[in-house]
Image (cartoon, rainbow, N blue to C red; front, side):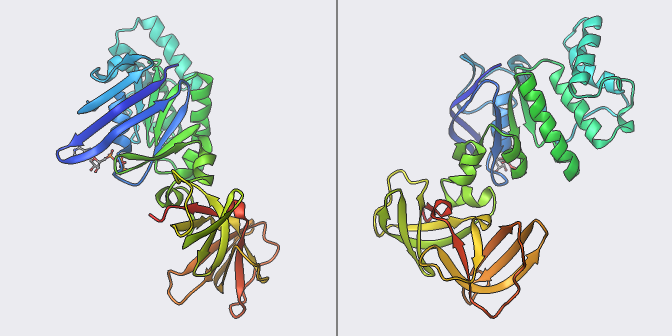
Length: 360
Ligand code: ATP
């Protein structure tokens, strides 16, 4: 197992700063995700750690060894890309063996290690199959075996599941976590799929324009986002602008155009003072639809849309004249669906679920 560290990492493409002085610490054996909007620098960071990019400034360490200038094969990393890049004319065994033959590993050792790698991904006994005789999920397992057969110190995964259908993606993500944990691999994983990250990551980093917006465990990022960007990028949320009016214990009170709220101030370096402009973030599943007017933590409106999905009911509550003034509510285990568009309803929340963020 190896830990990975970057210090002051800068990668530029011409005038564009793709990575801006990044300090990252990935623990040995950790499954670490990189997420963020398109073009934020995820792949560039992954490739800089793997050795496919040499940074203009800063350093990369594997444990205490500096590897910044080393080529990929000398870092002991293995990379798995979204296109599996398997050779269709070769059988499964040959595809997996390729990396070992290139390294001039002895023939009997190659056979032993390829079979071990195929067993790891539950493809034992399928070595003689042609690649074009495999399903998408099986091809993906072969690609994983090919990355693992060289016994990498760490595994770099760039959108490894994006070619698979939704059901297989769910199955394979669990499989990837099992393999990483069983074999003590440190892994860095780039994805656009936040569910993939939330479900199997030990920790994740959200990147924004070459900077880290936030680093933390999935539940930390979801429950305590540090900014509007993170709150809206991971999961869905409703934003309501307001102003701090006071504090009671751990909760702050906020005056908004639709009423008074109390909530947790998250993502501030210093506690916000009275008068500070803020933005509330309340996730749809934290809101309930009520016909009772509570004193605080409620948004009044009229139902715009009611959708019954069995395990969940989704409501849009129109809170003003414009189409943008809509609050989304997701009610779990709905015992009834409300469709009355005339009555005033209230979206109500618990203070614990009202997150107060900086306004921008
Ligand atoms: P996506 O989610 O779309 O794959 P990303 O977060 O992985 O994006 P990167 O591929 O790391 O983003 O790119 C970061 C920035 O660097 C982007 O603005 C991109 O256009 C730019 N970039 C990446 N590679 C190169 C390159 N070889 N030459 C010039 N610019 C590049």
